[in-house]
Image: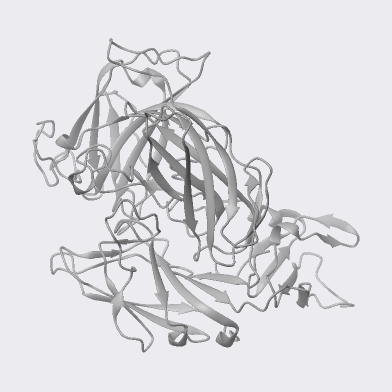
Length: 529
């Protein structure tokens, strides 16, 4: 029941249908919808020495929150990762690298254990943005014991904020503990219930699915876990592409960026109560002494549009790096509904930008954000701007006053909210009166520190409609092309339909389309793209 203001359905016979295929996923973080177990091995941040310090493996007592490889002749970086366990029978190995500033022309290169011919080149990167990279690595390229990772840059220095391996295993493909102190037993858990925080919403068993009324923009999820230090809650939905992988509908969540878990945790706490993940629903630290204790968390969703196909899962992690993703399985499908529409728009052809950067770049960048020219702002009650940033730049919108790109956040780990971490998705409440139909001018301004990044995929604007009570009206066809009863139509011309709805909105997943009584699969183009 997702409303798209100006939703266009495009169906084209023949070869044009191929244009509707989803783009390749370049960098998911925890994308599994089925239960999987793995152990994580993280390179210590004692080996991260920021600028060019060679050799890198010096076990600095302080380390740094980033490493900055450059060319082989200037500053290659060698990192060591010890795998104490026998993984010869395990299922597979994945490498995770948290890349920053890998450039539009990809710079990062990697060789593992001095392999004579195999060089990895991450296929992701922008000039001023984060692009996490996940790559399956053949087990034969790694060894039990010390493994050496040589990073360098071909087209300039870039940043690495974390490096880790995930080794997947199950009962028939075991990961065998190495040494008396090693542990390869994953924790366990399962979802229990999902409940809207609307007063009249009943509790729904997680594996039943159903309607979730979210007029007050809060959903409660409950789970039980065994043997875990943390339980992380995730949702699968269509929203802001916070992991920058080209997919807006996926399991939302990325790794924390402030030296966790490879280096010192946030605020000096050991370990941090909020765990090592952000941009998911949230993380709870568990009580290992109470195995029957249920855990529940509130998901704040003012930035998520109405839609079907929403699912939930948990990832449980122990203190030794063992994890079980989608523990107990992902939930059944839920439909997120409100008594008002929620509309989102993004900026096409967005280009990321670095402000100030030690005084060597401009302190301001300006963008034109297009909204529909026929947008009637009287139909909306609230407005938000979403975005990914390094540090906290300021911004102005049209004639509005200058302010931060984020709401004020807190480091109080007891507060469960989408504003708790300065690295996380920036969500800013807008004065809707500052918006205009058509082009809107957004200026981003340097605030402090070395500089600020305005990152891919760029700003998103979310509008909440006015709650008019029960939606009793069906969606309507606004326009069709070719028009009804048209003649002399090119057989290769696309058939397009524009739908609208004055109530809750249009659920694109429920649309059935046929051409000459033959059901077809349409391709969707929406105004927020």
